[in-house]
Length: 200
Image (cartoon, rainbow, N blue to C red; front, top):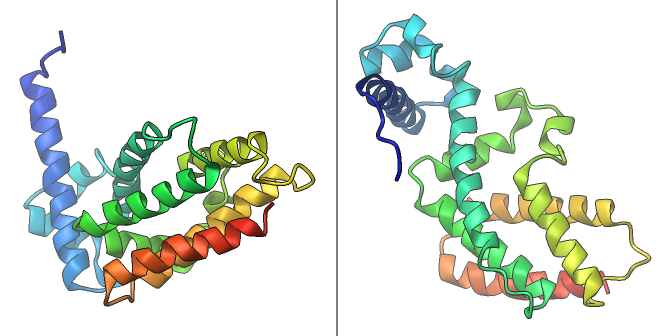
């Protein structure tokens, strides 16, 4: 049986949500860099000190968004069938993850900012961190592709994973500016298939 949260825990959860929702509202209205911690706290009607009990910075708020995405990404992986080809796994992940981003109120904004390292102060090493869930998912797809003979064993797996991530980054940035989204998904499946042939 799942243990019930205490009144204190529920209050803490409510406060964190209040801060997060305040930030979402302001990030949607103003440029990310122009929003201050004070703005977020004033909008949420809390003290600045209380903010730092839950988040270390504005970037940390976006990091919270991606942590929630990771939970949903893990659920996509559960849909992978061993009988399916690795290309199908990759296409499924691309489409489902982009739809997750599309449906989240901060998704598109968070994606745009995440891939702007200047805005978040992210280093290349943090973007290409092999411990990130997305890299682990791509590594799983690559291993499956090699096992099935779809991907050449002569190709370095780590380089392929990084290549898939770069492709994924490009797809996300492209998606930010599309108007016909369903056509985009059709083109996505085709482009992934064409790209996959180069790995064989």
